[in-house]
Image 1 (cartoon, rainbow over the protein chains, first blue to last red):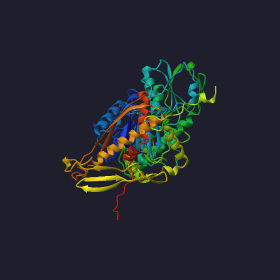
Image 2: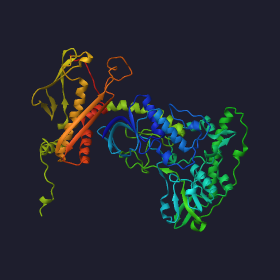
Image 3: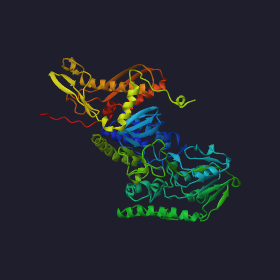
Image 4: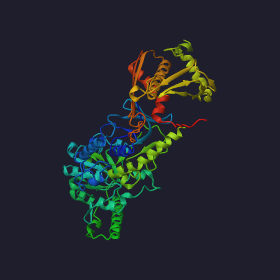
Length: 415
Length: 192
């Protein structure tokens, strides 16, 4: 009914497990509280057939981890199985099926109520992840009931959708992948294109992440003056890991027959409003792609690379400049809206003054304003790579010594 | 008809706890927080081998020097299997007793304040220790307990859920549980 340990880790996904390894290496006792199974979201909140965007060498965690195909792209289900094996290999002390009800600071330590028990700890690490709840715009409620609304965490393949047209809102990695597979199922797709980053899967013959890693792009530190909300909402690159990492972009979707429209702005009955100036969004995506390629090109030039030139990667695709201002969904035969609009996070159980006005955790590279309370596994937490699995492992290795030092200080402060 | 019928019944003494006096004491301490500053003391003396005696002569509390109702002392020793004379319990067993009695005391107080009549409270405490640590045979082994487990059996005139909450609250307010799990600065110096 009551358990005390030095560190409580909330969540047993890649972040919590990596930290478990890093704390074990330092002899720090800890317990992981997990609401579902190890890697629950990889089991329950990913669509069938999803493959990780990143090649396997970027999906490693510290300690015992081996893979046969470093250049391959693992399925989400495959990664869930890897996490389970990792947990066993590192003997992580995970309590599964243990949902956190409250976290508070009381009498110089943390008191956590979870799974109908109370837990005491000198440090708590929030490793509940970035992909908590789908970020669906509030105006989605105004859509008529006949329109089926689906979020990616509940999407179970195109065949599970009603027949008829589908509007996919959002054109980051999730949006473009779902648009492609839904279109391929014979359901005509309209894709509402908001902020996005176009990126080639390969450049000058090399996989894009290999070059991004070598050029130092992934190592970029969290910018001091950046808006935290902006860093949390950075769109993922328009890439897929399916079909061995096939090329996927707006031009390819258009060739498949997907209709491209501008950013979705609001709804009025069955009518959706869109930003008609689609060209501005396309241009912005194009600028981001050129910036990315320029960084790679600079790195390759500096290192005297002999890789063959790749003019095709620089070619601006022929995409529509103007889209409709509004579409009456039923009149267009659109019966389903898929919200590929990213994720938000909610911490209703966290009774500590570490949330900003948007309800997001305020953290300085993993530490918070409350001594002993840490965060791990959020985009750009410490580096650009923090958004990727191997980057989370690296952050765990960086955070563990800070947690250890905090525990030592904690005892002195208690005097 | 009158306000009296709306008032909750006054809490009465129960389980051997004088609840009205206890609540009045809480009120007084709330008004004068320095009353709550206590310092406990223990005076130890070596007898022979691993055998020692520790006396509890008095303590500071409620802004004055206080005495126990009578003199108390405990004797500790090591068991014969560890070349002691087994003239008393081991010091680490005393630590287990401290945890058991602290949480039991809390249960007594909290149940009484919540006006739950108790019939029985039984505790079992276990602590694991690798003696290679204190014997100096394994530098990687810690000296002290590597884990402490306590089981509480409680029976009283309340549903199981309410009894469980009483135990949890006692743990949450336990001085010994806190110091065992949370740590405390400890110093040992040569006295004159």
